[in-house]
Length: 141
Image (cartoon, rainbow, N blue to C red; front, top):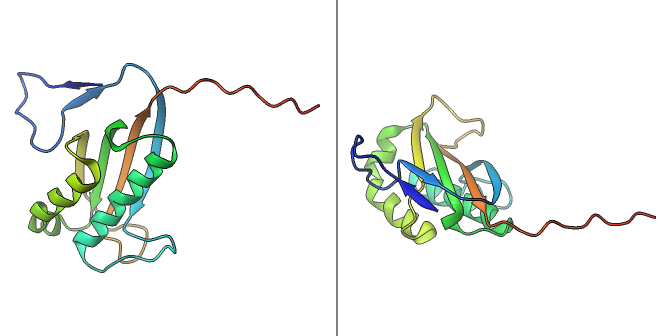
């Protein structure tokens, strides 16, 4: 991958302005919230929900054969921007634990509400997985 930055933009902090991948398989990860395997929110607090939502994104990428470094874009939806800003240091620590020092292109969007009752954060992603050899279709005869 190549990180794309322009001298005409402010230096990014904690994200990249653009990331280019030469080739691979695109993976679109649906919005993930802070719930566990039983579809129950892990907490009513912002930070644990953020951590779990990002963990769910990484788990999806891993299940597809990728790694956090293959994530090229994250969109983070929050119901309370202040809660995000109040937790920004802890969010950074949780982020680095799950993503390392990989900072894809990101956007943070405050929304009025999320679909699941009590959800405070939802994260969607686009990843570019390494190319895999094409599979030969099974002969059904």
